[in-house]
Image 1 (cartoon, rainbow, N blue to C red):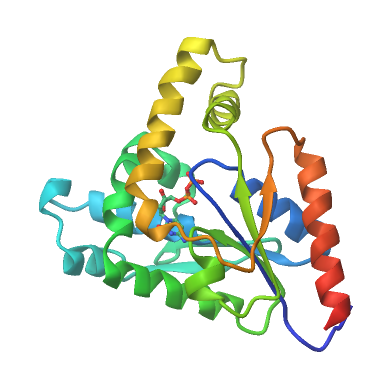
Image 2: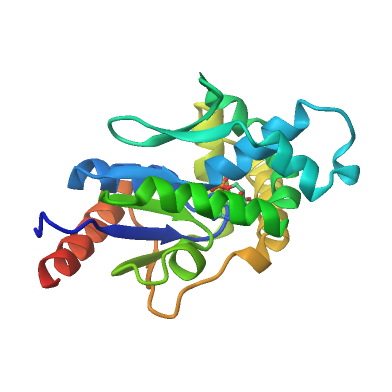
Length: 225
Ligand code: CDP
């Protein structure tokens, strides 16, 4: 691999398509770092929720102000959102944050804030970045862009298995499928497939298989450069 240049691989796709866990695994295999852009949208939402007012009344300025002390901290394998010096941790994955995050992600000022943090983190590093618009808006020149998709039912089944740590019932999967399809609809404008993205449909792939595929693609483009 060319050791002198820094590299970016983007992984975008709809809700719960496995972008973050796949991106982390790909980054680990390549010895690169992972940046999860969604973690910043979630951290901004979390920060605003800690202040007064119901979500319907949130202004863009109040969300940007609430997020002002949130930044991305580099660690060995990945970047994590911190508030001041304190790691935010799993609080950003709560049901409450998930319910309000699409509203926050539609605010142009918040998108500009996230994009700046992500570009800054990536500067001069080898990174795998995941989100909705990494390959179109944030890194349009990335040499490898992945568009990661899976059937909604399968996405719901995987997310529930992870959350409940047991096999979910069909009724539970059906309810979660509805949630996921609703969130896809709320996120539709900011979820954009790059024209030069490689489509990876993971519905019938195991995670090791999809990781292997993306790593092979990454190695191929890095060697060519
Ligand atoms: O839960 P999931 O992995 O699908 O989403 P996430 O990556 O944690 O992102 C949470 C939310 O942030 C999404 O539902 C989008 O509203 C928003 N997002 C975005 O608009 N653009 C990105 N590049 C990443 C996330």
